[in-house]
Length: 303
Image 1 (tube, rainbow, N blue to C red):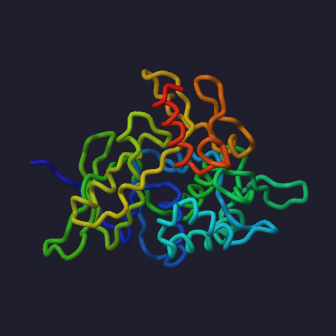
Image 2: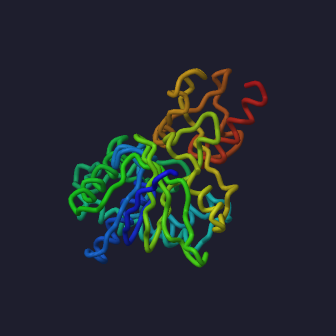
Image 3: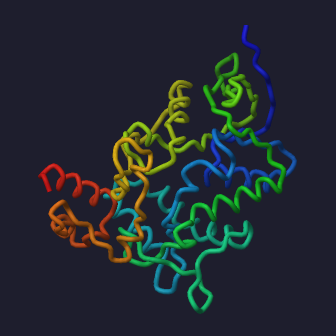
């Protein structure tokens, strides 16, 4: 019979991207005496999708910009399908988060000559509001958050993959999570008072994708098997510009940063003709869904 090791914790967080690390730090700040554990398939601070972000973080902090303007860009970009309460919360708290990242967690974003935070142009925005650290914004954010996690003594289970959410005997709640040590194959059950899924989406269902390959939809699959509801599963975002280097290399799918379009880069079809203005008056600065569909239509038309 397979022996299963056991651990206990107060809060178990699955995933160590920006959401998981922020959650751990906020929980630690609110209740320093509770035990918090982060489980991650790779190495904390060295894996996941947030680390791969090149472009930046949209936030309305510049003179002339406003939360309301940012909100309308977001709602219109989402074709009014957005959950507007969630969108407003995201946009309104973005200002707090960007100051927290710099002033509390040690991030340092690019500056204008006068010392204010530099914000660059990004597609789908009517104002230049993308805060960035060169084109290594994700590395800056995740590295600083990981340093804070290490400094605060938050427990880590690195190179552990979650397999299943385990319900209590009476089925009324979760008892914890079953994980596997990816180095040894040994099983571990972590009993937890609360479990937070911060596992991201599932781009690896597609042959070519820009996010990290460890973002494999397993968090949502575990939730579904445990009987938890999933919402808006059809809302898959396609990043339109990626590197095509051949079908036999994992380099294919590597993101070509959206800031290139924001800075005035042109998209050309196989005939070396610009085509985006046929689909949207904003041209290459249209939102990702529009650009992705336009590129697909060009390819379907043999261009």
